[in-house]
Image (tube, rainbow, N blue to C red; front, side, top):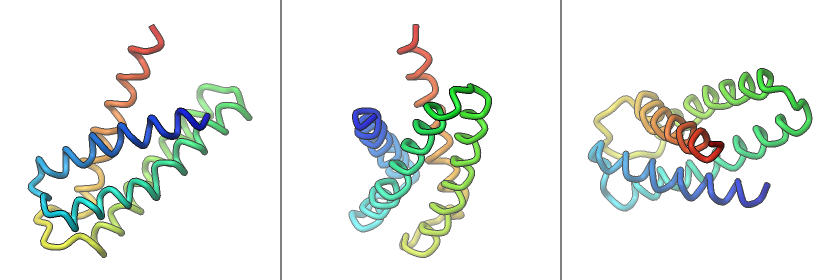
Length: 116
């Protein structure tokens, strides 16, 4: 389980910092904020999803928990971006949705490819 936490965080940071840069969030302080927000939220989501899968051993319950967690992450990260990002042009909640949506979908594709 520790390995999945590390891999997930590493890939999330690469994807979301790259996406932030594409969205013209490029100064060091803002990129550090994006990184730290992900260091805060990603391990909680991955650990909770892994534990849900182990405890319930039910695909539908696990997926429901994952979707709920992702929605909560967008809300929490949007709030943190609103509070701490400087001079961002995009709505912070849409920014969080943009980063997490693409990162989540990328993770889904990677999981599908690795399962084959």
